[in-house]
Length: 396
Image (cartoon, rainbow, N blue to C red; front, side, top):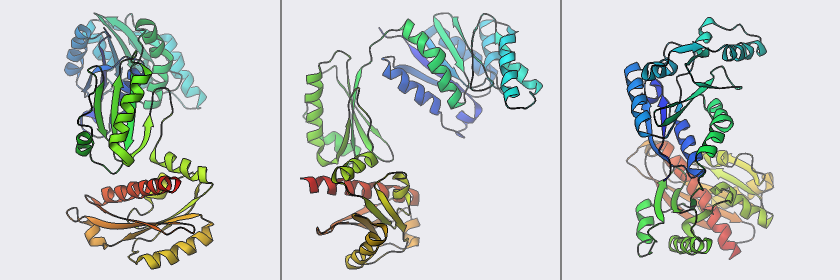
């Protein structure tokens, strides 16, 4: 049986929605990759009663809990005090922690405020987790059935302490083999349509099927037990990919690299020895920003009011190709004015026209809806996917 692992996040800004709890998401991903899936996430604000009661609950039901936040020097950083109250472990001054905090300020030639002394007060019996990346030391302790690890909420510091102090302890205590996850990435198809296309596939009972919708893609996830045969994984993955068709742009397999729509398009262009220029309307530079730093992007131009026909687009593409020394040029033509684009209830219509050297241009008309930022992002993603499909069809 895998251990029961929880993540406990502390901070008023989290429960008020002022920031997103990226720490919990990152920790869950790391732990799942180790074969240690997280059972529960909990978030509490700056309230001592809530903090102490939740700590006591977790000590009774979990085997391990990673706690983030609340280790700073200000009055609203209550984690160490809450641990002391919850488990009757008085705070004690740790001179080594204090020296590390003081050294952090000395290296930056800054005086250390007296309030930072608070960060050197740790619950009695706790193991200090040295923080070489900030002022807040972490600490760990066993209480009841649960091993607690407390780390700062600053993401960079949290990640370093996880790798240096928490990960080795978990590997010693819970030597599990991770499950095998296959992620099939698609664009241009809805989640309900995805599920409908997969109807009739007889997934084995130990294989878990799931979906995840992101802003730039939809993922179909296949989770296999760690000892599931590779041939079986290949067979099931191939079935799913065939059902989803050309909407699939990348398949992430265990032990292999990850891919995005940008990297896939880049790989296709490099294989042809070609580069690309972009003329954007609706996406207003967002498409180019997604391709920032790519060696195959030769030029980018934004013309928000471009409502010409395809013949005018061809003349524009010829000009851009000459000036930017581009092999291929994508031109967006938007049929809507600024007022209708800003109207959430009014879908926007856009033509993508791709000029590929001496070949006839390829055309696609799409509609995008929602808020203006959503329309712009969908326009960028669907244009990029149109380029991907066109390049793959050229190969065929």
